[in-house]
Structure formats: C-alpha cells, structure tokens
Length: 335
Length: 278
Image 1: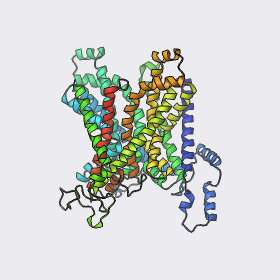
Image 2: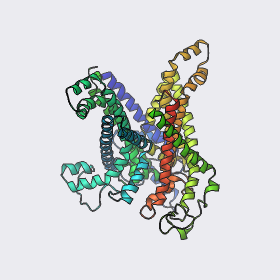
Image 3: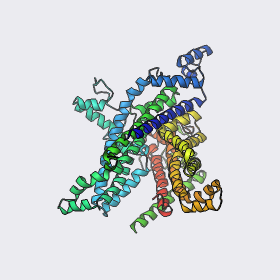
Image 4: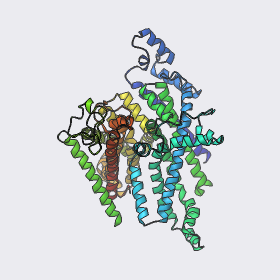
C-alpha cells in the first residue's frame, strides 16, 4: 500500500465512522418517549426527572449532546448505560470477546466446510456429487442464518438432543479466568474440559452463521479452481505423475484462493452482523444479545456504543482484507 | 442442456410455491378452519392430528393459548406477503433511483451517494432494523419503512455499476447527439436496459423482507403479538420448544420454503432474462 493510498483510505474510513456516529446518534433521538421517565417509578415528580436528565446530560440541546458524546469517545469514554447503570465501554468490552470468539469459530467452520466442498466438487466435476454440492450450496445460500439457527435447534437440540441450545458455558463449570476471551484463555491454560464445553455451546450458533458463508466460499472457490486447473503449469504438474488431488491441493489451491479471500472479507462482516439475532436465538451472552436488550430498554448511550463498535469492527475487517490482498497478490506487491 | 432443465425446475417449483402462498393469503378467510385470534384455554398445546392426544379439527395443533396453528399460519401469509411487496417495492424505488443517479451523473453526485452507501453498510442490518422499529414504534408500516431504509443499498450498489456500464455504450452517445435531455436519456434509454437487473433484485429483496419481518416479530417488535405472524409464532414456539414443537416447526418450514422460493425465483429470472447479472 503506497503512502498516498494509505492516507486516502484512512480519511474515508474516518468520514465513514463519523457518518455512522451521526446517523446512530440522531436516529435514536427522533424516538418519541423519554428514556429517563421510563426509568423512574410512576410517582416520580418532574423535579426527579429533571435531576436524572441532568445526570445523563439529556437536558442539553441535541447538537450540544452530540459534541459532548463525540468528545467523550475520542477520550475513550462512551458514557453510562441508562438501564444497567454501568460504564458503556466496560459493558461493551465485557461482551465483545464472546461475540468475537463465536464469529471466528464460525468463520473457521465456514472456510473448512466451504473449502472442502469446493475441492470435492472440483475433483468430482461432472458427477452426481458435484450436482448435489451445487444444490446444497444453492439452498444454504438462499436461507439466512436465522432460519438455520432455528432448524439446528430443532434438529440437534430437541429431536436429537446432542448439543446445548442456550448459553455460552455450563454454569456448573468452575471458572477463575482473568479475561472474557474464555476460549482463548482455556486453550492457553490447557483446560480441556472448558474448551470442550465452550465449543459444544458454540457449535450450533457457529454452524448457523457458517452455512450461508460456506456456500458462497464453495461456489466462488470451485469456480476459480476450475479455471486454474486448466492452466499450463497444472498440466505440467500432472505430467510429472502427481495425483490429481495432490496437484489440486498443492498447486491449484494456492493460485485460486485470491478471489475467495476478498469475498471472505466482505462476507465476514455480514456474518458478524448476523451474530445479533443468532446470539438472541441461542441466549448467547455476547454483544448482539446485549444490543437487542439495549434497544428494547431504550438505553441510548449503550445502543450508541454498541452500534459504533460494530461499525469499527466492520471497517477494521475491510482494512485487514485490503492489506492481506496486497500481500498475497504478486501483481500488487511491488506496485 | 442439464442447466436449462434445472433452471426450469427451479423456476416452476419456486413460482408454484409462491402462487400457493399468494392464493392462501388472498382467500385466507375462506380457507382457515378457525378464527386465528380465537383462544381456547381448555385446548392449549394440542398436538397435530397424527400425534397421540390430538383433537379433531386442529390439523396442525394449537399453541399455548389454544389458538389454531394452521389458521394462524394461513393469516400469517397475508402479513408476510404485504411486507414482501410493500417493503420490497419501497427499497427498490429508493435504491434504484439513487443508483441510476449515481451511475449516470458520476462526479460529486456519485461521491455523495457512494459515501452514504458505505456508511449504511457499516451498520449490522438486523440491529439497524430493530433499532429503527424501536424508534418508529411497532406496527406494520414501521416494519415496511424500516426494511426500505435499510435495504435500498442492495439495489443502489448493483444498479449504480450497471448504469455506469450502460452509460458508456454507444446508444447513450447517439441519444446525446440527437439532442435528448439527460433525464430523458436516463429514463427512456438507460432505465429499460437495467430493468431486468432491478426485477431480479426485487425478487431477492422480497425474500429478505419476509425474513426481516420474521426476525422483528421474533424479538416482539413487529406488529402486535396477538396478530398472526410467522415470526411471532416462531418466537412463541422457541419458548415452548420442549412442550409443543409444532408451534415452532410448521411456521419455520413455511418461512423456509417461502424465502427459498423468492431467492430461487430471482435466480431463475436471472438465468432466463438477464445476461448481465449472470
């Protein structure tokens, strides 16, 4: 990435984040109804309401509130949650690890499932297996994560109860972890009982999130694998007598991966967006679940903090993918 | 050859299912065996007719308030289709108009619209829709407005790039030479050529609208929870999943088939009529 490109990129990123902040701030303030009077018991006097409004800064004009909020964010202060009466930054950081771990496990599942189907479909090109894979991809692509989540709950939670369908971890497990990155910490501490419990709880929500993405990965990767497998250097590798699957995995995949990678970046943002409803569905204690509660409780500072966090995550993913793409694409590397 | 056969099968299967849903929705009051709102607390959680303990007349069983699952699903089709058509059209008009403008005029018009699209897609859509409905207040019209406000970007992005491509073609130059006004060229020359893409996206969007409505009902933010919606039934079914699976499963299967059909119908249209999106 050249210096100029980097500068333009950072500037547009800042404009986008600012735009998100403006939209979320003003959208939730158009709402009729007063979040403060909802917090107080019915007998509260106007004076009580006024005092509480001053506490949350809601007595000032909207532009003033916006400037105060923005100043706070720059200094790392997202305000105080109205319904939970805690620091918004603390709440968000407490829940974010759960959502990130779920998203990355889902991404992992999607890449392996999608990659596996693509490789299988290419090796068995023209067979019944390929048709079956195409059909499956078509279906899992058309049906969103919410419905996969419901179907999986029914199938593997109720009819064949092999996996838990709610929560992040069994309450009976004794945990004295120092971070909220439970899975990561469990791995580092070799707590295999915790790892298996966490993964069991994550499996169904992660699968629900992964199925549509796996289908997209499989379709695009299969397409580029088929193109690559017709190239001269593949013919050369074949003529050396290597088996078809070896040629495909060692020589084909490396060159076919690039279009898929960019796609995964965009789609990973969608996957993270999907955690909102999937976490609700599986009562998984993450950011999305917190977000829905915040909206229902009219918790303005908390909603603002969470939406902004999601936006920043999306933007970071885009930048990472940009950098990865430049690093992996030989044509851009020296450009 | 094989491709055409599957394309046709896909077209007829999805069109067939959607026609059934349409007919069911239109004639709901003649088809539904019960009043979808009628409660009978003596007959709560009655299982479907082929399961032991069923009651005659309740083919797919009843929910926890003793309301007939089949009748609620039939009336639920009305709400699903209203949302699909209304929200889909609104998103289509808004997104296509902005996409046409951005793609045709370029320059600062394009810069502003593209920046807004960038900001919009930085919101998680489900959270954004829940937020909007919370702000607008529950009700069918809020749901429709919220879906349109969120999903216009889907049309805008595709139509913008498609309009750009069309604008570089010779027929646009000839129209300019003939002295046609810019808006006239946009409406009479460019629009007809991007129309197939718009129609395909519209079909996909209707499926998405149905799902978003279901999600909003699921978190109790769509229309009132008494009214029969597939999402509302799913929400109730999720909470009594270990006692009465049928309350969840039947609406879920119908939702599944409907969303799948909208999407496959769009794909089939794409294969049949639109060389561009392929």
